[in-house]
Length: 155
Image 1 (cartoon, rainbow, N blue to C red):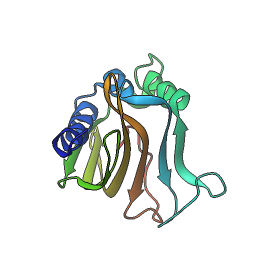
Image 2: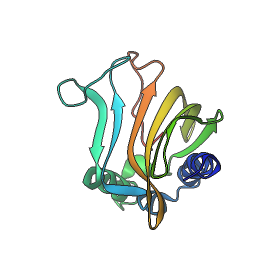
Image 3: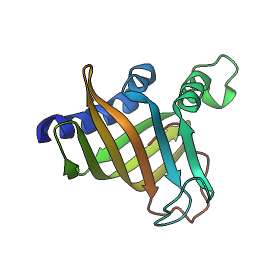
């Protein structure tokens, strides 16, 4: 794994989400990976403290299936999103793993409602024979302690 591959991966992942290519996005995840969105600023432990989101591979797949479900009325019409990324900052890079932090703005919209979130995403990535895969993803909301509407998609 090199710097350019890692940076391209982060941009490509955001693009997949923006394009609604959720099943392809799921293929980027390792089976044991976890998606975490802490509730508190600088939260360190997702298991002993409440989180906004803490999902394993099974729960991520269930979320994606729900988005495409015939009875998911909250998705008629479907929500759309857009990620605006700062250049990803590589915190750690080895031949077979990387940790990357990216500050971004995330916009989610459905009908006449729009929600803007400022966030920092930390990707833990691993090199596999099939390419780079997500071993973990942490999304820290800048305003994590504020009240906000449901996030339908995934920042």
